[in-house]
Length: 385
Image (tube, rainbow, N blue to C red; front, side, top):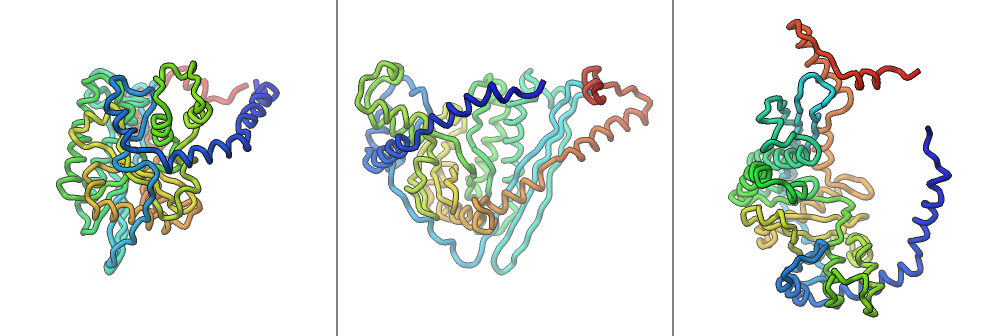
């Protein structure tokens, strides 16, 4: 049956009605005024003293909530940047044999007296039970995503180590492995051990690691404003009688990027914030710090290890390279050029996926072994009557 659009249309109207532009603009002004005047120390004190965590992710301000800063220009003489991204062919339950293919790109762009560019990839096939299971859990879904994030960071470090200074490593997406927050101790330990070693490597070589999140959906900063707004126990929000309830509820629906549009100017960043995610406590001291930056048409989130945030030179170099890479992309809204190239070098398209399957099937045939896929899969591949 086709999609019943008549059933969906009333919900589309209700969705648009929720926007209520007049109310939204009023509450946005109130939220931005609160951002400018809120006391960052009080927010940090509340986060520290509260025995039970807030039911939302809250940005813990290192200094201020609403201060903004221009991103300093890059030093003369150029720089080199490494980037990596990943793609995979997950295990297929309809196949007679189980395997997984990982593809991590290695991109280098160098600017200055000796400009250069290099694009490559590290391709791996996993097929043993030891590789396809992590502490007894099958390598699929969120667990496969976490495995990919670990391998991408390892390849990124390997790529960045070969670059001349000043050098920066760009990672696509968050450095916070949310997928492991609810994982078993065995799974978490097995995947986080190499992840921590990679973070150790960036620190040992003092290579600024910057993780870029385009169009971020996070509400951490908005939730910090909710903490600043009142002392009501979040478990009692529904019965709250505060005059600030409307603004508090609005902040709970607002994205950080929406809050900061018009607050940040192009090439400006917010102050720095620490994440309160539980999984980061397993990072071996590598706390993840983040800020927001207007890269010229979009508010992006940039994450980094704490040592980068505390090293002014590394911080300015890393943010300067991010901003320059966005400008070099030529897109509106922009996206770092090195990460664009990393994505292209990593992607496994439909044709290549089919080639891998044909190679596996062909090797079975060459050795006289049967290769029979599931009946359900075969029925889906046949043209319907």
